[in-house]
Image (cartoon, rainbow, N blue to C red; front, side, top):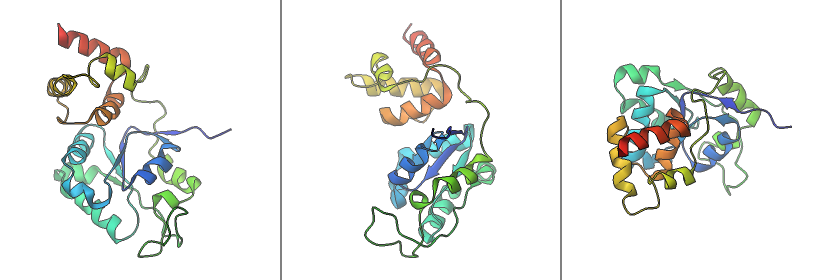
Length: 200
């Protein structure tokens, strides 16, 4: 039987999609990716990082190489000092090796988040666990987003913008980013109630 996922109220920031895939099997939390240095040009991810830092808190878990340290510093640099001070930096151990999917090891020859043993990642993150999920109730799905008019319809982008404005959320988010964000804040029933009142 697989171990239960660690519930985290803070959002976790990692570098790439393979890091996210690895962590999503270990933790129950919002996981944001910087796409390496892509974050420098990604206003949506920057606005999400700022939002979570302000409302839920952040755990930054970039690789332990020079690039990872640079991205970590950049994230703290885009936040107000009091929020930057509250960012949890989880440093993975420097373990020599190469990820299975890669032909060559990293420049420094160490494993990234995706290559680190799951038990080590569990140990690193378990101290930040929450006993219960911060949102109680049924999770919001992609189908729910469609049924509520927030995706897959001609006016869905406008509806998302209006909803974000009303709730004080970052605007211009894709439907999948908004779905993750809404699940960290509301249950399905709560969202239905909000959208219903919004349309009245």
